[in-house]
Length: 450
Image (cartoon, rainbow, N blue to C red; front, side, top):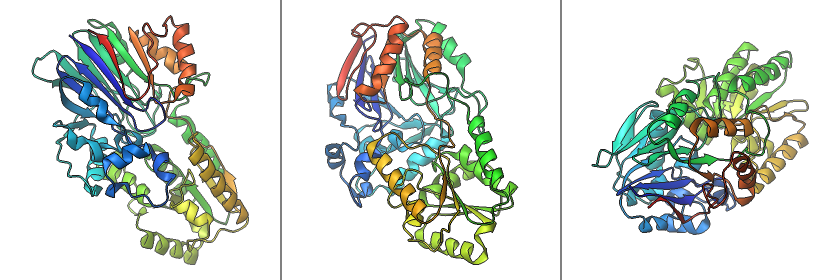
């Protein structure tokens, strides 16, 4: 059976992930993401109202025109998890393909919300839920099967999809870390990965996110970040001024920890910001978390400002707002607070806890720097980098290669500079550039089996 891979997006940058695998006449698309920094660099861009071609020209979503060079029919669109760099282009591109979107329940719910907010295209693809550990037949031959393997990442309900073909398995390895003690959900299913490496024809190809391939050691568990965060929040128990925290809105495990620790030190937690309300509200509705009954979640600007007024009236020392803006995004709550555009007044000595790292990208770094400077000018004291990455460090990469023993490896989720550490790592494991290690770019086709 012919096996061909189209590397469409995410092979020249971190963001706008999209890859297609053709097995015979059946094609499966993995991810359809947005490159958020290409949007943020423009003022007041509303992607919901924009045409896909304009967004492609901006470099914001994948240029999927290479799909016309793939013979066969798209049978499924499979996002790995709910981050925007993996689902953000579904509302712009999915309608071009007569195929269902297949994902885990939390991811499907986020995709549904993306589609509902879309104002340019009518997206009528079926949305199909599939749990980790389940499989689905692809096409009519009965020879190709899709499997979801549970992985751990900085968002709940993440999977690595595996396409089983007569020539071996294609494992799409974006994004994960090896967390054996996650705060929410099951540990990474390494046992299944090892089985896939030994079954039948083994693993034909492994496509891997190499974000942290240059970092030695292993990525710590979310339980490590939880202990660090607990230590910081508990140390502020006797402080009688304002404490504000920020983290990734989609990081439900971290938000849950912040809510719990706020209660522990006698403060009322409140979630503020549109995306904070969206992700946490969705997780609670789907029973992934059980927040306290009195937890307030407010996304609309007027309701957020009303909440800030209430906090000022009742005393900042009684509350712990968890807000959007950990990357210094211009319209996020923390940035508005830093600019003095909300009723919440920061005083000398007030604490701002960043339970997130800056995404290493110039737009984010500049915005975060500006936000921290503005917060400091108002007297705020900053606790930064209370976080663990959602991506594998070097030892995790070695472990995955040993578990799967793939015939071919394709680095992804980076630019050329970002690929270099992973290329060196693969070379040390016996892979050779141009033979079985394929460094590629957006818009290319790689024929693995002719």
